[in-house]
Length: 246
Image 1 (spheres, rainbow, N blue to C red):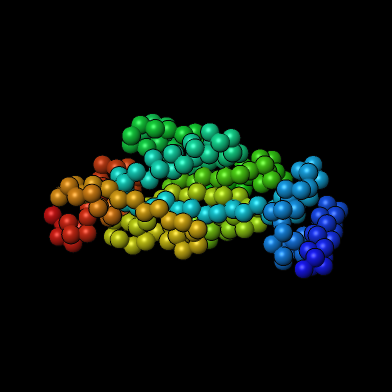
Image 2: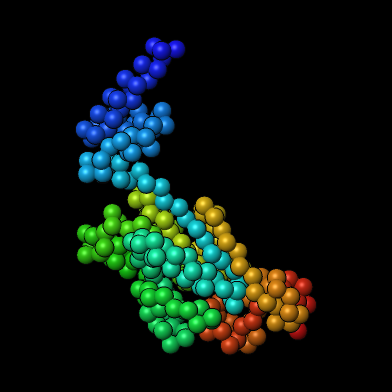
């Protein structure tokens, strides 16, 4: 038994040395034998390598539901908590959403606001994030928040989220409508929900029966466009009242 303990201590010591010398073999050994947490506790932060830093674990969280269900309020709440914790955060919103008179804020119907960068294309997000394009730099970020994801191109947004989470260990919190007024899922939202670490589904108050389980967005008036900015033409409905449309 003493021989095993001695071998383990010897092996652990050399893993620390090799990792500190920026050798991929040491890092791989530490991962293989689940020693990475102990090693990084022992090794001073001043000698952590870029490989060590990229080992931080990102995650993808999706907030989704119908209109009037508090999606943006929940996003603001989560981002505010992370800001208080002094996390390095960048927040985006779609430029088409200029409701509530705050075009550069994420706004909720309860009156809360949070400053955000309005963009219309995912490529614009890269410009703000990638240091090679004059942006903040992926290495200087802990969290990215994105509101109104249903407006963005699915493939481009999914690629960005996977890059942030999987390659850079950055947490991403996205928020948006789950389906249109015909109950057809928005492609961006549906795809990200499938990839997410967690999905938070919100519900609203049905404007017909006043139940609190409204999960559909019903269009009252308007054209045939899939998306029409604004809330006057919509109201939330529960499943029963959506089927029995009045």
